[in-house]
Structure formats: C-alpha cells, structure tokens
Image (cartoon, rainbow, N blue to C red; front, side, top):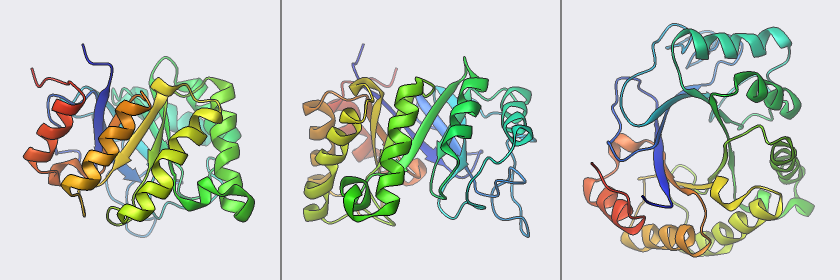
Length: 248
C-alpha cells in the first residue's frame, strides 16, 4: 500500500473521479449563507439537496472556495448545524473547508468537531503571504488559522493550494512550495496530514516533477488536483507512478 494519497476537486457533482483517488471534493459552495454554489442572486447546486456522488474514494463537499462570501463565516451555531445536516442528510463523507474569504476559524473548528467522525480538511492559499506573515495581515491570519486547527486536532488534513489561475512560474514555485510545506509542519500539522495541491492549467513536466519531488522528499500526505476532469491521463499516470498508487 502506498504511503501517499491523491485526490481532487470538481465543481460538477456529475464528474466521476479516477479510481485511484482516495478523496474527491465537490463544490465550490461559495454562497455560504444559502449553502449553494454560485451566489445568493444566482444560486447553483447545494449539498443539502444533492446526494453524494459515487466513486473516487471518500466523497466530500467544499464549503468556500474562490469568491466565497460573506466573510467571517460560519457566523452562528445554526449555520454550523446546517453544514452538519447537509453532510449527514445526503450521505456525504465530510466537508472540505476552503478558506478564501477570511472564515471564522473558531467556528470552523466547532463545525469540524461536530462532523466527526466524518472527514474534514482545511484548504488555504499557501503562497507569498503565507510564507511572509510579517509582511501581510492576511498571511498572519492564515498562519494563525493553520496553528489553531492543528492544535484542535479537528481536521484530518490541511491542503496547500500552491497555484493561482494557473501554475505559478518555476521561480515562484521554488521560492514558495518547499517553504510552505515546512511552515505548515512547523505550525503543528503532522507531515502525513499535509497535502500539496496543483492545477492542470499550466502544468508541465517540469513543475509536476517538482511538486512530486516535494511530496516524496518531505514525506507528506500526498497530492490533490484542482479541476481533476481536465487533468491529462498521461499526467495522472505520472502522479500514480511517482507516488506508487495503483488504479485497481
């Protein structure tokens, strides 16, 4: 059995993940008050009304993501119960909290604890701000969140998004990916709970090899892929081989 896991995200619950995935996450539930994708004015699908898809290992839904609103969520115990009810009511295996809108960390932890024994993860942007907290209030906030969640033992893993709309340049990758992994472990997250994440947009043989080298050299938990439906089959094969993950 491999020491590593792979997984990924899709915004469409109809997408089926490869059989080699241990975790598949569907979202992004960016309308946090209504628990839907989209916005309050133009809501999309909701995990409270959509049964968890089959396949792709454990199936989670993602609370948050790029453009999520409003900030400071969840705000109330009722909203935490709504997260729990959506998860249990439609047989989801858990929730991935993708903090891209300054969420309330104490309530995220409370939600994670309420969801146990279901799976939970904390996903965050692990770039320059995270690696330079003395120069950025946002960086300090994310470091504090990672530390608080690590101390709580509430999350099963913390996921480092090391990309933007496409893969960073190699100079930015080398300057930030390794330091972000080390910082996360220094912030109290066990190595096997640290997951590196990439995107197929702008993925090359060079940057994919670098990410895989970081996973194996630092012996962290594995690698997740944003928007996995567009990942090339050849790149998935490279990932599976490098991390010794079979497809059977």
